[in-house]
Image (cartoon, rainbow, N blue to C red; front, side, top):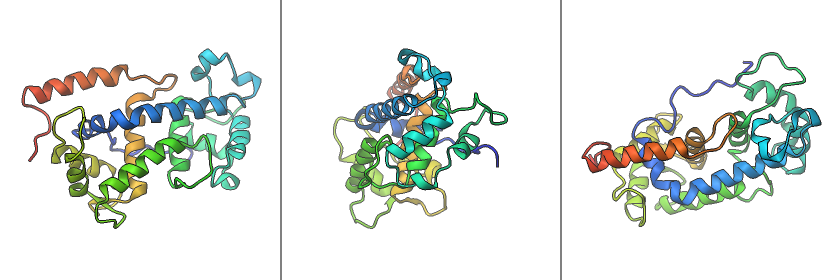
Length: 240
């Protein structure tokens, strides 16, 4: 397979978008900060032909040289097994044959960042690997996993979030949670382990704020206005 095949179902589709809105206030800013810091760290190691000014760095692509140098210096768990050329071939979704102009734009880079680090735990010593966001996700998972079995059912998530204060919407409904779990789970187990849960949250945030050359909440905030109006008018995800 030359290019990574994106999943048919988007994590943020349907009423799962309301669920993701609920967690944005304590997670999205950290995710954005981690992505920006990682992109800048990799971009700084780009070859001169792939580097413009720092103000325009998101318009550049991360090249093979940057991948090789930064993965190694950042002490990623799988650093020795990651082939930079193969990374470009896998994650350069809109690319053709590999050439000296090949690289990962911001959107492709973030997807690479998520998938190559999804299984590195919070005890990992890696940097530029979404480490601070994963700490937030890990703490959130532990809070929701009230029976400590390492799996989250929709009921676990609903019950845990029902007790949380200061969320954007007054109620977290079963419809919001069920859509998130259904969009995220790989198997028909109706439960998520820490890797599935991390995948769902990271990709859900990625889908809503990362473009090929920009990181922006403009469209997301516009859709949040619509969703708030839907709830106020009696539409959107009901409790049952």
